[in-house]
Image (cartoon, rainbow, N blue to C red):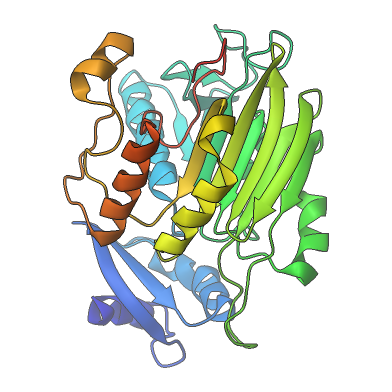
Length: 328
């Protein structure tokens, strides 16, 4: 894969000047390349225009959710083009006939940007919509990303790569109207990039009753229809068992109440975790996973989930459903 990447760099005239640390395929037509520094990435992004007219393109690495969303936009835009429309896909939106259209995760459809949800979303009727994403670095996210984030009331951004010095500047870029908190990303060496950690936001107008955190874990406690909810964001960089023990200490069984735990555990659990399938079916459609593999970290996570009687819910690609009447 590295050789394939170097061939592309040669086409833009930068083969000898850039260091490819790693490269791997995520689909037949997509290769993800890891470059040694953000400066080198900037050089590549400036020179990618030289690939115009070829069958090769370079774009920012996106999270799994972002790739899936962009694919939905492309499919929708292609269908509109077949009908004679001029539809252009951008990050997070499709521009058509002077209007912007976005994918609505709640209603599972494309809608015009600014159009109200069919189901009322927001603080007015005490229905809350949240999103949790591993952003793999938040500093270079585009304006469209933050506009999309503004559609949610509870936000959890994981693996932000923001350290203490960078946080002051980062705060100015975050959407206004939310109560933001962050955990500092750590540098293993002075020259290395800051790695990991969390930024969470709660929309102003939602009653917040408490905050608790430990390294890699941040909890926001809110009230919805006079009921308390515990929203816990977790980033377990290496899937360590110690982080799970810390989580259990924070969440005492007798104090669980209405609880949502969301995050990146770096563990593969296949279809495991939670109640038996026949029990889930009595309540709602159960979790479905295309990934059937379970690793060591996944076994520890499943063990904790089953010990506490929790349920894994992966529907919506990292999005919380409505919090209503004590149920998720």
